[in-house]
Image (cartoon, rainbow, N blue to C red):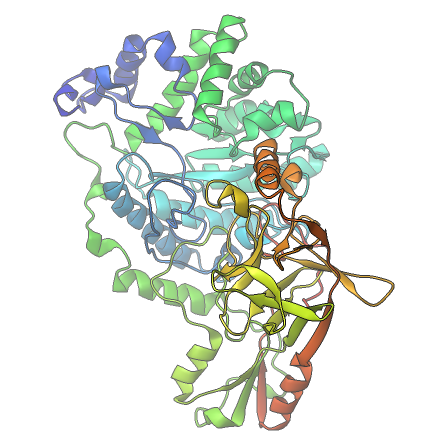
Length: 612
C-alpha cells in the first residue's frame, strides 16, 4: 500500500481534523461498521493499514505472545509489580520506568507494525480491600498517591512532545472495579461523596495531570449500569477531564447481554456504548461488526455516532505518527539496541531497590554483617528458590531467585529447605506414577510428589523425579480429543488462564481422600491404570464442554470408576526445615503467595492469611 500514501490522510502538512475529514468522507458505511472493534482491518483501497489498539504494559512491556499469533516470547525490561513501583514514592524514577516501557514498545512495534503502540496501562483502581485479586496491578488505596505515581508512569510512557505520543496510555478500569469473582455480572453501589472523593479522583488526576490518552471501562455495573454503558465516560471523563478515547474491557460487549442481562441484543449494547462515549469494542471483531450492522439497520445508531467513535480512535493513531507519509514522530527513532539496554536495566534495578519496604528491624538484624559466611545461614520457605510471574508480567532477560542472589552475594552455597512435604499418592495397593509420555498411571512403583499447599484448598503436585507439575489435559486445540481430561505431569511451569495444575483434596469419613481438579471434578481411574478428570468443560463454556463430550465418545471403550487416595508422607517439610534451622546461626525465612493461585485476574483471595 506504499503507493497510496499520497492521499490527504497521510499528508502531515494538513491538520489532524482535515486528515480525519478526508478519511470519513472516503470510507463507506460498510467499512465504518467493520471498524468499531479495537482490532481494525486494513482498508486496502485507501491505503490504510491494519492497526490494533491494545497490549499490556503494567510494569514493562508484556510481550509473552502466549495469547496472540506472534510466536515465542520477546524479552523486555520487567519492573517490579505496580504496587512495588508505587512503594518507591519516587515519581521521577517511575517516569523513567514509563519512558523505558514506551521506548521498548516502539522497538517491538517495528517488529510488528500492526500493533503495540496503544498500551492498556496503568491500572489505577483503588485498592480498598487487600483480598482483591488484582492488588498486584494497582498503585495503592489513596487517590492522591495513585494519581501522582500513575501520572509519572503515564508521562514517561507517552512523552512530553506537544504533537506526538511515544505510546498511548489507557487507564484501567473505569470504575468501582474491586472484585474479580463475578465481575462480569456484579454491581458496585457507590454514593456521590465516595464517587467524587475516592473513585473518580485517580482518573481525574491521571487524565488532567498525567495526560492519559484513553481509558478502559470495567466489567462490573456501577449503580446498576454496566461499566461500558456508563454515560460518565462521556459526561465526566471526556467533557470535564479531557479524555481522548475509550475502549471496553476484553469481551465486555458480549457480557452485557450474556451475564448482566442488561440488554437482549449485542446491537443494543454497542448502540448504548457509543452513546455513552465508548469508541472501541475489545471483543471478537466479527461479533462487533455484526452487532454494529444490526444496530445501524435497526436505527439504533447513526453514521454520525460511528464517525465520532472512529475519529476519536484514529485521532490517537495520528498522534502516534503511524499514518505520516513523512515520518516526524521524534519517539520513533529507536533501534533494537534500545531493547533491554544496560541503561534500561539499571533503571529497573533502581526501581527494585526503592520498591522494597522494611517493615520492622528488631535487634537491628539487618543489614547482615558483610563478613557473614554462606554456611552460617539457612534459607527456608516456599518462595526462597522460586521465581513466579504475575499475569501481566513480561518475559524478562534474566530470572534470579532469592537463593541464587544470596549465593552470588555471599560467595557460597546456601543451605535451603522449602518446607513442603514429599508424598506418595496411593490408591489401594498402587500409587500414582508418571509414565514415559508424561501421563499419570497407577503403578506398583509410584513417584514421589512435592505437595505445594497454597492455602484455601489449592494444591500443586510437582513430580520430584522429573520436576514437572501434575495437570489436567484440557485445552482445545492443544490437546488431542482422546486426551481431553487425562491427568498428566508434563508442565514445567504452571502459567495459563485456567491453571489446570491446581488440585483439591477432599477427605472422606473412612480416612481416604478424593482428589479433584481445578473445577472440582474428581479423579477417575481407568481399567488400564490411566487416570482422568472427566468434567469441568460445562463450567467454562459450551465449546469446551463439547470437546469434553467428544473426548468421552472417543474414550468410551475405557471403563472408568471412582478413585480414592491416601497420602503417604515420605518426608515432612516442616521437620526438615526445623532440622536445618537448628544447624545454622541465622535463618532467612521467605514466605509469600503464588500469583497464579492466590490472587490474580478473575481470582480473589478469601483471606489475608499467608499460605500454610
